Length: 531
Image 1: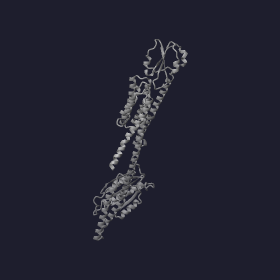
Image 2: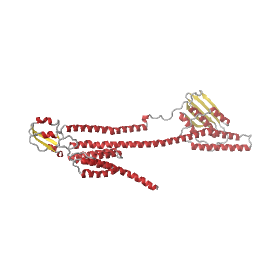
Image 3: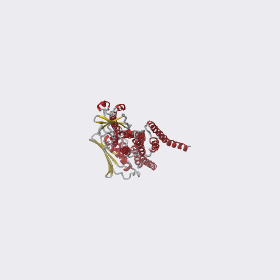
Image 4: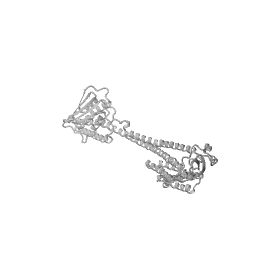
């Protein structure tokens, strides 16, 4: 059943283009048939059967060979250039349709423009080879380019619009996926914050518990069972510290921001708790008093430097004396924590102790514009942190909007859009103005050189030109072919040519009046098919 449904969907997808091709062919064939019925002296084979057969092949072939299909339809338009009565035919509509499909398809701009130029060049060469009159040249230089360029530009616009809509949906999908990534990053940052708090607070507390248990284990007043119990307690706490360190390593993301929530405990209270746990700590604050506007970020960094230093001293140098100096100077605060060497006979810290402590301190100190130095000092260890009173922006300044890559790409996209808009409207608009202007001028010339057939019939041989000058048109026919001019005429006469009607596209009869001086000698009707 599933296979049958899949085949049905594939068959429907294959049938739809065929139905569209048949509908397009029927529409173009209908237009051709209407033109054929009203066309003078039609040729069934050349102007109906052959073109409809070419369209039946070109319409489905346009998907794979759009350039060849357009050239084939342009050849159908060239049939009108061969016709002796008029250059126009119904297949210029098909030419416009195929040009529009070429613009909407995948053919590149350069290849498409070369194809359009090649079609126009072919038509012009054919006009020159046939020696056609001015009406055919006018048709080729105005109507054919108009049928090629404007539909192609419309097809390009339609393609760009579809691409814009498709790109918008892709952008929406990208934003949706990015939103998911943002939520995931927020979750990871929360995990990192929890890991940092566990390392800074809970790890510190457990280290002090282990240190106090170790100090009680050495008390001479305890029994052997008490010492054993305290040893087990110290070992259990040390194992808990190790497990905590492993858990922090899993949760931690070193590239994420550290927690910035303010602590509720002061440095003095922290030192008092360390003393209660058996750590010898000497705390002194030197220099000027702490400024009242000290940033909470700086206060937290000072607290964490002292806390981490006491934790490291309790783990790596049990029994050592710790000296804490906090110096407030103009514009910055210096924190110095120094511990001596561990006492002889004190229990060593568990193996593998240590981890992200100093790296975590740097993550807290450097983002606020401070510096951290941690190195051995004599037989002990010293940590020195210098912090500004106000956090400094240590990151890179954001680039101005106009200097970013996205802004440059947006500027380039807008420039391309403006150029395409100019090509889509200005070029056809200018071409249309040129076409309309030249058509109006040509219509004016042809309309003002028409001698009415009734007036031509009233002319009599031997009349003086002044007698019938009022019936002559204001202009003579300016586009007389060489074959008409070379027709035999009486020796020594001067001939004038006029059109029999003002049709722009049809080849009409031409009237020739020849004078000997001012006297009318001959009047002739030259059929339009001869010119």
